[in-house]
Length: 130
Image (cartoon, rainbow, N blue to C red; front, top):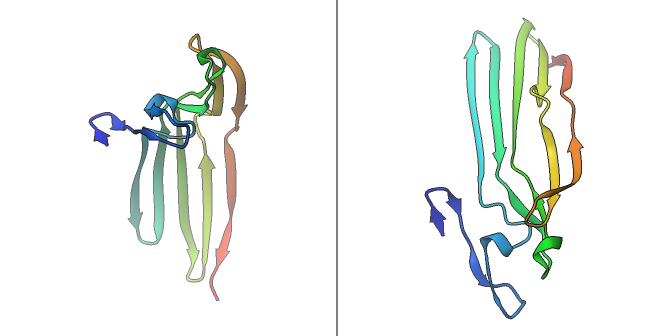
């Protein structure tokens, strides 16, 4: 079911009981990808934003032992500049604001469990077409 704030799910997923959105491990009810590009005379500039909402990472009958993945938003920039007819230079920056890729928290009190942080990644080079 699609709601104003995202997706919701409810059903029997093999456990014999009815599970709802907050009880289905791995179900991401909120996810958004947005990109905007500017292209002119062979030059290309693209800004891309990816957002993933909070979701249940692993289910446990005891709510204090459930693992939650916190919400995360990442911003990437990709550029291409023409050098010659057959050559382009590119520069890509992934995760420009140094956001945590994944943060796990446990239980209703959301106690910190683990943090995976991917530093900004710079990729650059030359593309050739022959």
